[in-house]
View (cartoon, rainbow, N blue to C red):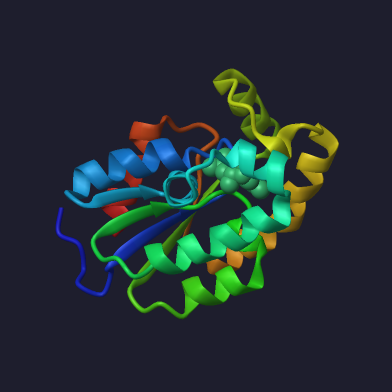
Length: 172
Ligand code: S3P
């Protein structure tokens, strides 16, 4: 597919379970672009897993590493970048995304129960999901930030990752 020259990188946002990593990898493959998962990038740069970073150093430390990994990742071109669900909550990160020209941000949305079920099915231990009530509160708190950053919002509740990618490719 032809990508408008004004789009130099695609950033996928959304809560845990929204499909950012799966959709991001498929989309990058379709575009012939690099795929970068911000959590994996943080893990590669720090040499620790996200889980260990939360457990051993606390969330504020993780958020600092996340911001610096984001600044680094936004320097790349022809890349699909999947953010961690919490990245848009930080003002610094929102400014970085908004002020990096050529950044096309897409919000993968779905209702909280759908996201929660997907995460349970994936059975990946995520520190922020440990308490479902707190996770739901964070979901609502982040919603306006995801929306404000987005050039496009896709409701993925009834879509497979492949269907989502088809829709995204046609929207560019
Ligand atoms: C987090 C989401 C995770 C990861 C970390 C914190 C969050 O990424 O960055 O566990 O605060 O929502 P995913 O959204 O890719 O699971």
